[in-house]
Structure formats: C-alpha cells, structure tokens
Image (cartoon, rainbow, N blue to C red; front, side, top):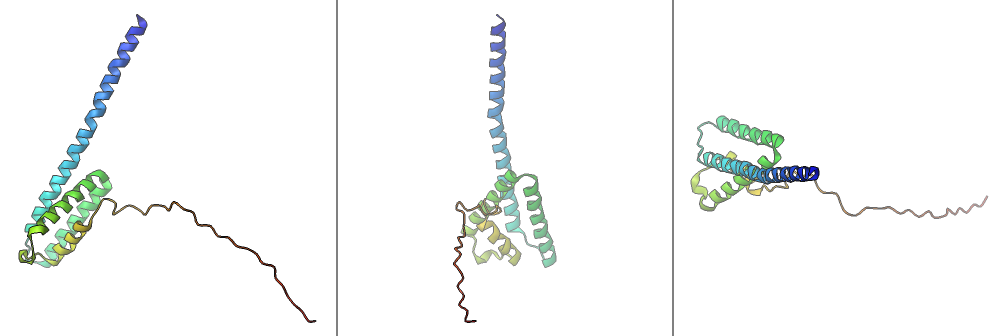
Amino acid sequence: MKNDKWITLGFVLLMIFGLKAQEEPKQQEDKSSYYEQRAKQDAEYEQSLALDKEADEADFWADQKQYEKDLKARDKKAYKAYMKGKRDAYAEHEAHCGHHCGHSDYYHHHAHFYYTYHSNYYRSPSRRATLGTRVKIGTPNLRVGLF
C-alpha cells in the first residue's frame, strides 16, 4: 500500500515534468518566429526609407547596428532568428528590385551584409583535428683543424 502511493506520486511527477518539457520548444519556436517577423517588418521599413539628409541616414543605420549588437549580446538565438528574417526579406526584395528603386549607398552596404549573413558568421574558427609536430634530428658536428 505504501509502495503504491510512491509509485503513483512518481508517475504523476513524471507526467507533469514530461508535459512541461514538451511546452518549452513551442515557446522557443514562438520567440524565434517573433524575431523573424520583426526582422521582416524592419526590412520593409528600411527598404522604404527615404531620408533627405545623409547624416540622418547614417544615424539610422548606426542605431540599427546597435540594436542588432544589443540583441546578440542579450539573446543569441533571437539574434540568429532576427538575422535569418532580415536575410530572407532582403533576398526577396532584391529579387524584384533593381537599380530603379533608388536605394542609398548606406542601404546597399547593409543589404550586402544581410545577403551574405549566415548563422556561423560570428563563430570563431574551429580547431584543427590534426596536430602539428616538429622533428629535429641532430647531426654530429665535424671540425677539421690543422693546428
């Protein structure tokens, strides 16, 4: 009887933790889809941006880069999802946009970054699988002396 209570309690706890473990990936998926959607909205705004002064545009792009840097420091998974959304949105826009859109040099500079972005961009290079060794063979010194 005592063992039945412990078995029942253990079963209930396993069920609770099992259900909880299944909920977290969905929450993570929602978070990444939010940042991808946010990136697409930002990209649409950036593509329609037309500022009169070059200084204003430089400030805008500096603020955008700072936002991305802060996001990366705060949550790397969210940053990766955001950058994936930006890459997709810029690639989609590039497919139908030519030189007729009249984007600025700042836009083209940042667009190139988004086109070429991939998730391993900021990772440090992996270590080599092989080890380098040096072999030094000593040879005897021969001196011939006359005196």
